[in-house]
Length: 531
Ligand code: ADP
Ligand code: MG
Image (cartoon, rainbow, N blue to C red; front, side, top):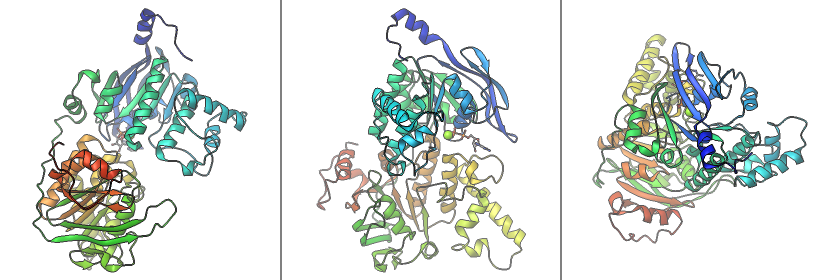
């Protein structure tokens, strides 16, 4: 399993040899090529990055390597020999393990039971638990075999997926965007594990669109754009800008900032908003006060799970609150009103979850547009004695306009929401709300798991909306994003919101302290301009 007694010279030879090679690999969905003639070489003992913006074809490529999708054309070589990988079982037999972007576990079962499901059926649960414990210890991936998956955090679930893959003793481990769901601390632990695997002579194919982490942990990188390889490099010798250019084809535009205005009228307000926790897993909101003015972006920073989703639910009307006056939109109390009533007043809301909440994945983009608008924007979309066909055309025109405005990359004119990559779907969702020209926009984690190009497009759209006179509230865990868009910043911690600070008057360190709950004595923190 480990390679400890290699001499330096023989290890060099070892590192050079090709483990997996891909030649001209192509996957078409209909006429659309998600992967288009891809060449890739993964050597023994390297952490190889597969970089590319959302929709580049990364997941499609690795699904072919793991036998989940059949290639349309091309060849896969394993240790120099052509192989056909028709199923995940074939891939595992060769020595390929995979940790998927979306986990595949049964919530009601325990950790050990979930792991046992991927093992041969004749192995006892005790044996599975014991082996899992050994692997977990060896690789610094702590887990509790008896815990129920439903009770675990995303980071813990990912550890189980990794342990499950390692139990097969793979030579190549593929991880599809593993850190998009992890805290920085969890990500650091993952990197240590990957480094250990590499030191043993295994190879890792690491999919990411985060340039810093690729530069930090990977020795080689292959960059995809629109299904084609646009570069192969040693990421450590590149700059973030040169990598981003390979990914998106042009320099990523930096967002044009807005200054804190303080000018316009208050469009959105929360006045001593308190909401009791609805479930044992949710956070109660405690006496929250905020104001967002026309022309302003208030960003709310905080570590996930401190009341962000509860605040979004209350402000959007997803869960109306008892005190009607605790929330107002354009001066009208709306606390006990539902979403449609708030939308009719000029509110637009973008929840965190793209698939299932912001959209119905199985429906097309145009149908999702109708669904989002059929009550609040009825006159435009379903109204007044127009023929069905004309309405249908209006919807198509709007859907096309939105896709154009936000540069949504999709296969075909009106594909199902589920077929879009995360970043492209998010651009469509944000565009759908911007297209209504809302007076108030509330968006939760606008660029969660979205690549640099799409994120920059989305942030610029938010800034432009505020410049045009709307009030924008952004809830985000990403401090870079917050500094890019915010005119004011507040911090949520344990369901309490700090006062808001002009963005240029609060540093990252101060935000960090507020996040940790060093809370809000309602005096300004020491200010500096050190961010
Ligand atoms: P990435 O992982 O790099 O974000 P994907 O490999 O998921 O990208 O997707 C690449 C492209 O292929 C996207 O435009 C996506 O919409 C399209 N695509 C992926 N799966 C399917 C599918 N089953 N049917 C049609 N199009 C698909
Ligand atoms: Mg993907």
